[in-house]
Image (cartoon, rainbow, N blue to C red):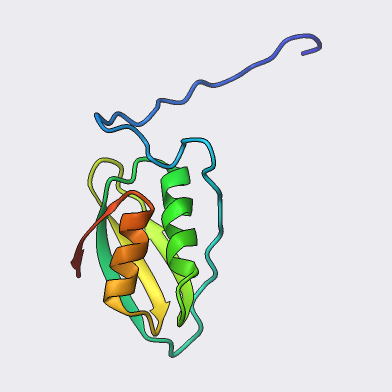
Length: 108
């Protein structure tokens, strides 16, 4: 296929508020798996629409003291699952998620 490009167009997440992580200055991060025997907490997060949203939340929460690992199971347009391993304070997690532009709706 010399001289031609095949590109698959992927659908964008539909949201009336838009994707708050894809604005200029958004950064990416990666989560590390939790160590065996580590305390984990689960939270429900609303407003995540894409992988960049996931990375933004993971980075914000991973920066908190006591957090060993963070992972997000994305449910675009719904309540995504945030799993935090380590000794993280719920109020600090809520503040990190809110500061990143999303809503922590509950501690599952």
